[in-house]
Length: 395
Image 1: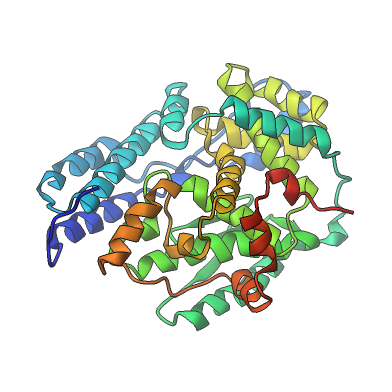
Image 2: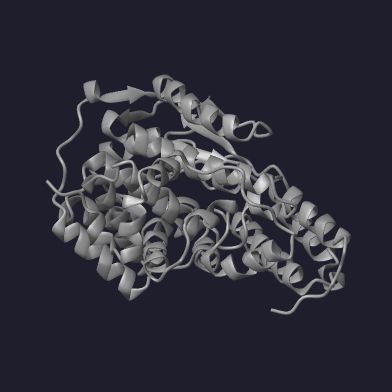
């Protein structure tokens, strides 16, 4: 992509900041996440696992059409640097689609917007997911005594947050408990922990590296750049972001067969939803045919049908598959933590780094530092070429 000399890039940075300001006015994931998952599960159970649960959502804090108007008032056509103009235009168009999704929340048309923003499920990805569900047997239920409650997990997360702050004193990473959330979610750099969450002890370190070592870390790395889109996310960043997060789980030996089954079940469930099947049939597919426990099958299905049909959960397995292929072809891992980006942005950001526009990222995940100090044993395995099936723990 060609580029023009623009010593201060003033207009580009102004539009960049405005785009981020617009996106922070609507916490997208929170707005498409139901606030009554537990109550809906109780009602669905009482109904004999039939029907469509009635999900409730947070009120929209803004009028989508007003923000859409602001987006197209931005004079991106006047940006002279063609690389930056492409990135800004790409982000504007994705933000418009996300606002349109919110405007259609609760309708069938929501899922079509979701496919535009997050993609669908290819035949190849579905085949991988189905194979994983076949080769990985269902796991036994985890007893409560082998889990941590939300306040204890929140306390454990502080160690990882402090690790980031020690590397980069300008960072102010934090975590908080929320009553209106059932799981974990990083939003605008904050780790949100649902008050009713229980985390298996064997998964604590993996979840810390997933949520803090990837999502929170890349937020603050993005904040260190003049291109502020790198902390809010370039268009389509979710695939790589979740691929990195799941790979982080593997680096700390926390990518369990049960976790891989869950990622595969999400893909299979989304494909089923996109074929037009109702909620209860997708639940039955996951629970009865693939052996996903009742509660896990419900919450997986709820994530898929939220908003009217949400395809985002396919990005975990798809992003992992794409990342493994990238590394096996000689791609570098550490530069991917510069912020929240998608894989085909790597050459664009490399160009901006060579031109002195972007800076080296200040934060590196703990597990990569440890792997480097040990002589890169795991990274070398990835560079030699691995598939998702090679990540399955042995023994």
